[in-house]
Image 1: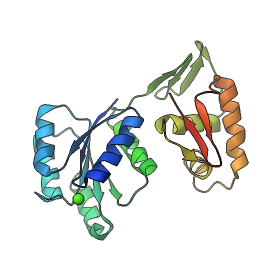
Image 2: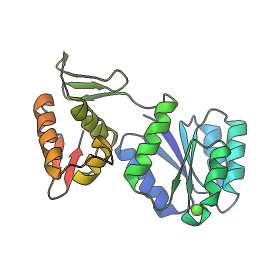
Image 3: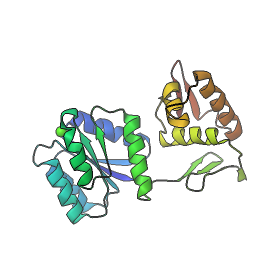
Length: 219
Ligand code: CA
C-alpha cells in the first residue's frame, strides 16, 4: 500500500496518525520538522505527504513550495489548526490536494487520504480475504472465483469497511459513509445489510460486531 510521510511536530498526533495508517495497511513515516521531512523525501519514494502547517523550523507553506519544486509528483494534504483557517485557501491555491482542520476524526483523515491516493492511482484496489476477492477499481466481488451479486448499498458498505479496515465504525458513522449524510435511516438498516454481507461473502468471522457500537472488518 501507500508510503505516507507524516510531517507533524506534535509527537502524540504524529504517532496516532501513523498507527491509524498502519492499521489500514499503509506505511506511515514520521517527520517532526521541515528539515526531517525533506530528508525523508530525499531518501525514499513517498506516495503522499500529510503536512502540518505549524512547524517549528520553517513555515509550512514554504516547505510545501519546496516539496513541489523538488518532488513535483508528490501530492500533499495540509493539516491546519482551527485558528489558521484563513490559511486554508492559501494552502489549496498553493497546490495542496486537500486540507484537514484539527482536531479531526481519524476516519475523516483516512477518507481524505483515500480520495487523494485514488486520484493519483496510488491506492490499493484489490483485496483478498480468505476466498473473497474484491476489486474496487473494477467494482467486482468474487467468492471462490464466482461473482457475488451485491446490491449497490451492500457494495458501498463493504467498501467503507475495507477502506477503514481494523477500525471500529459506529452504526451512525456507517450510515453516514455508506448511505450518505441525508439518509434518514436507523441502526437496524445497518444491521440488516451487515447480516447480508456476512452471508453472501462468508465473512462472519472477519466482520466483527462491536458491542453497543458498530462493526469492524478485520483481516
Ligand atoms: Ca504543529
